[in-house]
Image (cartoon, one colour):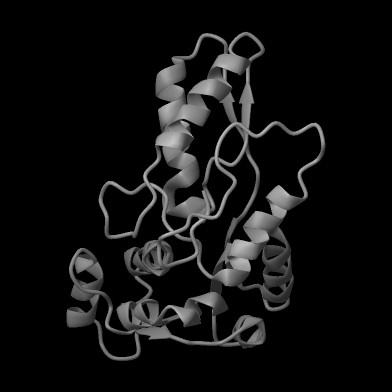
Amino acid sequence: YGTHALELCQQVFIEILAAGGVKDGDAAALLPEPDHGRLGGFHRICLTFGRGKHGHIELLAEHLPPGVFNVIAGDRDTGRALVEHPIPQMVSITGSVRAGMEVAGSAARDLKRVHLELGGKAPVVVFDDADLEAAAEAIAVAGYFNAGQDCTAATRVLAGPGIHDDFVAALAEQARGAKVGLPDDPDALLGPVNNVNQLSHVSGFVDRLPDHTRVSAGVARVEGLDGFYYQ
């Protein structure tokens, strides 16, 4: 999970480079979400600009002066202080709509530019003439990648009435066939959630399902693996 979050911050920082900000003497500060503090590897990756497959971050470390890319550990109060400080000229956040509204409001006081990547429930629409097998496979990958911990995850589907039941069956089959495992397993589609609190949050949705809900696959804690796995 931490590595995926790093990939998101890379995108924003590379945009700063492309805009010529570093050339003009600007710098960037990264404030990871507090739960990443439980993942020491995430901070090690950030602080060393990455290794291995994150070669482009390693390249930044070789060519950027010290202090151009900074990692700050903290909580929402730390983030609020960064946003409200007069020095930063642009703020980028990946988070909830509520957090985005708060950041935008704080940034507006001194006309900081903002980049808001906020969570939502935009649906995937499957029409009656769709290739059901291809649609189910693609939506399963889009939904289960990174254990669903992705701002672009396919968490909601609207299926046409003519194919609804067949599509549900096809997607359920994809879910049952999804391999659960560690992130370094190339065949594993479903990894662990971030921490025990997130596991409780996810299982709570299932515990509170309304009576009209029909469960077609999954909804159980995965045993036998060291981590917070839920399928």
